Every structure is written in C-alpha cells, then in structure tokens.
Image 1 (spheres, rainbow, N blue to C red):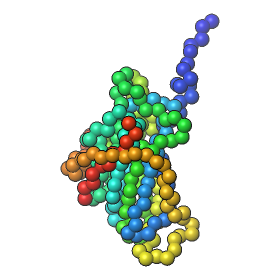
Image 2 (image 1 turned 120 degrees about the horizontal axis):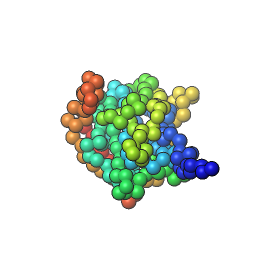
Image 3 (image 1 turned 60 degrees about the vertical axis):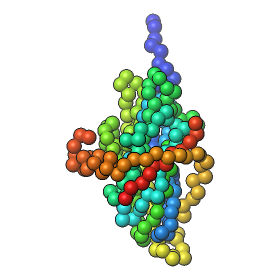
Image 4 (image 1 turned 180 degrees about the vertical axis):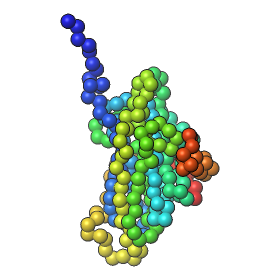
Length: 222
C-alpha cells in the first residue's frame, strides 16, 4: 500500500502574523515614539505582505514611516503611502514566485516596518489594522506561495492602545508602561508617494467600491 508524501513545510506551516511592538505604552503630548510592525511567516514562503494600519489623526501624527527592504525583492511605490489627514499608513513588499527567493521568517519575527508617531494631545488612542481577510486594495495581507497564492493572514492582527499624558506632565500612568526602545538594529531607506494616491484609494475603500539590508522611508503628506 502506497502512502502519499506530505512535505514537512505544508504539514507544519501555520498562519502568518503581523503584530505591533510595543502594543501599549504611555507617552507625553508633543513627544515622538516608535512602533515596530513585526511579521512572522510561520513557516510559509511569502510572495507579498501588505500592512495597512489606521490611527486617529486627532491624537497621532506619523513623522516617519520606513519599511525593511531586506525582506522582499521589491517595494512597489503605489503600495507605500501615509495619510495624516485620514490616519492611514500602508507599506507593502513583493517577490515573484518562481523567479526570486521568497520571504520566509527565520527564527523570531522580523521588523517589517518602523513607524515614528508624534503624540498630539492628552487622551487614550488606538492603532488598528485594516483587514477583511481578502487580497484587496488597502487591506492587510500576507500571501503564501501557491497556485494560486492564498492569504495566510487568516485573522485580524491585534491593535495597540496608547496613553498620551498632558504636555509638561511630571509622571505617567502607573498602569501603563513607558515606551521602550525597540532595540532592533536595522538599516532603513526612502521612497516617495503622492498624496492623491492614498486619498483616492481611501475614498474608494470608504465608499465600499472595488478597489541588501536597507530600510526605506516613505515621504509623508498632510
């Protein structure tokens, strides 16, 4: 009797994940803080990863957004944008299946992107993910290699909750940790994207219509 052979990768590969580090903390209004977007392919070979995070522009402003150019083969310019008016940041990497070496996490999760925020005013605010499980414009995905490729990001990633204390405050909320240094050394670099690109795309999404170790910085628009 012949038994089918199942590859170890397919047998043990789990769902891929995105996460925020740190996922909570306290910062003073007017100060900057850094959030790392972590990616773990969980044994999958990945052709494309796109993060789309949402934040409240009344409380937060993106000062700088960077992607880790060492993970993927290319970072299409029409998939990198930040909109401080609507509170949206999108970064994406891609490798062609069968042509390039696909991304696969080795060891612990990698830094996919690094976003520097400015805290604008006192209050509690969230950073959340735009996600519906589908490979659609302005939706977070991690596409696993296959024919066809499938989204291995099968659940909405957990967001973050952040406390902003008043400017000039002498203390922080004892129930919330202060922001740690990310402590992850990576080299980052730059790409420019027009404001109209994300403004139009975001409008379409809101209306429900179909729509080398280096780091690169996305130029921001108000």
